Length: 244
Image (cartoon, rainbow, N blue to C red):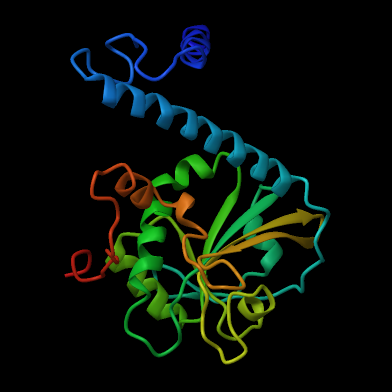
């Protein structure tokens, strides 16, 4: 299969707008020249985007070591109602890395942010695949019982849901403002013995202008919507059609 793909890519590189493409690849056999030309141009753009994405990923992996973090303690309610107090380093399990999703769910609120919850829905779906490579937790300021109840309502039965409301964890990692307002983000941490080192945080909004789509690549919903002729438009996820 790789040889066939490489051969097709080499073939595409030689094509000019309006040139023939095998009928079973990219376009139907009866597509007109205008569509064929536009699709070839789009393919080149898609390949350039892929190559740039790989360059960015390589630069991310090449970041120098971040700072060591404090030994935070979280609160985690179990299915039988007990509250555990795991340390940050204990969240790694047998893994060397830990991915944290900072969920917008302040204390005293009835529901988590619907957009954040959509991301966690996706993490629930792929957690077994991620578990082959890294540990994964969801962290919010909400009380442990509220987190567990919301997770149960959303079907997050396989994810660790941790309250950091009694710590400065979110604020220290930029996932909370000085006024205590949550910011959605993903953070990657690395364990070094009994120490935990910061690697990387990416927020939903790009600083400094606050432009969104900072973590859209981590949700299949946006990627599929971007394939549609109508695009994503002004749609915003809701909790009402998930939690009745």
